[in-house]
Image 1 (cartoon, rainbow, N blue to C red):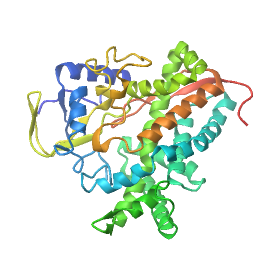
Image 2 (image 1 turned 60 degrees about the horizontal axis):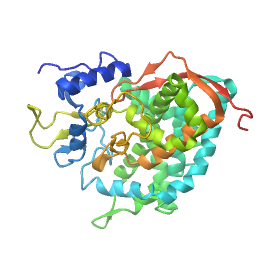
Image 3 (image 1 turned 60 degrees about the vertical axis):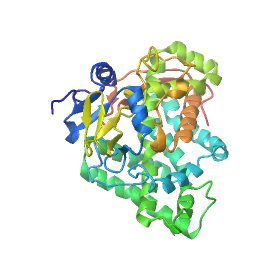
Image 4 (image 1 turned 90 degrees about the horizontal axis):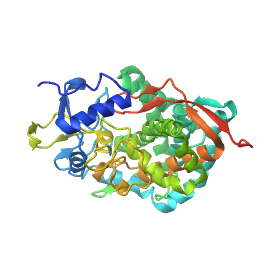
Amino acid sequence: MRDDFDPTLSDDPEQSHRMYAELREHCPVAYSSAYGGFYALTRFEDVKNAASDPQTFISSVRAVVPSDPRGLRRPPLNFDAPAHTPFRRALDRTLQRARLERLEEPLRAHARDALQPLLEAGEGDIATGFGVQFPAWVTTEWLNLEPHIAPYLAETSFRWVNAWRMQDRDTVNEMSEKMYDIARDLVARRRAEPLDIERDPASSLLAERVDGEPLAEEHLVGCLRQSLVVGMVAPPIVLGSIMRHLSDHPDLQARLRSAPESIPAAVEEFVRLYSPYRGFARTVSRPIELHGRTIEPGVPVTLVYAAANRDPDQFPDPDAFVLDRPNIAQHLGFGRGRHRCVGMPLARMAIRIALEELLAATESFEAHGPFEFARMPEVGLTSVPVRVRARKPVFT
C-alpha cells in the first residue's frame, strides 16, 4: 500500500501539526508503512467515535505504535472488557475527590521542593528536571510508596521512556525490570498488610474478585508496573510545552500570575493545545469502511489525539490558546471511553499545582532552547532549557 505520510521525517511538533492538518483535510484515514504499518485517524469525530467504540476498536492486539519491543501485554491498557473492567474499577476507586483532596497539600510541598534547584540556579531544564522529579512524587504519593522510591522512579522511568522511543530493547528490559521489582514488592507488602482500598491502588487491586477469584498475580504486578510509568510519560512534555508557550506569550504569563483563579481553565486549554499523544492505537474487530478506505483486523489504527484536539471543525482557531474556550470540555487530551486516562483527575490536579507553584515562585521565566522533541508515540518537547527570575524569598 502506498504511504500517505511518514511520521519519521520530523519530530518537530510544529511540523508534525502541519502534517496532521494536511491529513485531516485531505486524507483523514492515512496509512504509513513505518513501524510495521499503521493507519492514523486525525479528525476529531473519527478519533472520538473510535475511542468510544471498544467493541469495534479493540485494545488487546495493539495499543501503542510503536509497540513494546518485547511484546508484553499489561492491564488495563492492553485488555478489553470484561477482562479490563476489574483493573479499571480498582484504580478508579483510589482517585475519587476525597482522596485527591488529601493528596493536594503533600503534592504542593513536593512541587516546591522539586522547584528549589531551578530557583536557586536561575536556570535549568524544566522538562528533564522538575518535569520528571515532580511527577515521580505524584506517583509515589498515589501508590503510597516509600519516599526513597521517588528519585529512583524518576531516574528509572526517564531512562525507560527514552529507551522506548529509541526502541532500545536492552535498556527497556533493564529499566522495566527495575519497575517490576517495585511492583512485586508493593504487592507482597500490601498482601501482608493491606491498606484502605479507597486510598491504596495495590490494596484495591488485591480486593478485586472475578467470579469469586482474585486477580492473577502476574496481572496484578503488571497493572502496578503500568501505573508506575503511565504518569511519567506525558507530564514532562506538557509542562515543557506550557513553559515554552508562556515564555513566548509573556502577557499570558503575567495574567495567570496575577489571576491564579484562571489557572484551572488554562490547564484545560494547554492540555488541548499540547496533547502529547499520537501513537495510542487500536485494531478493528471486523473490517470497517471509513472515508472510503477499508481497515482490516490486525492493522494498528492510531487515534491521533494531538491532531483531533486541533481540528478546526471542533475548535475554531485551533492553533491558538483561547482561555475559557466555550467547548473546552470536549477536548480529547485524556482520551475518551473505557480507556481514557485512568489518572485523569490526578493529572489535572498535578498540572494545576505545578503551574501554580511555578508562577508563584517566579517573577518571570523564559525558555531559550535548544529544544529537543519527543518521538513516536508522543509529540512535543522533551527538553526545554529555561531561565527564571525567582521571587524572594526563595522556598526554604
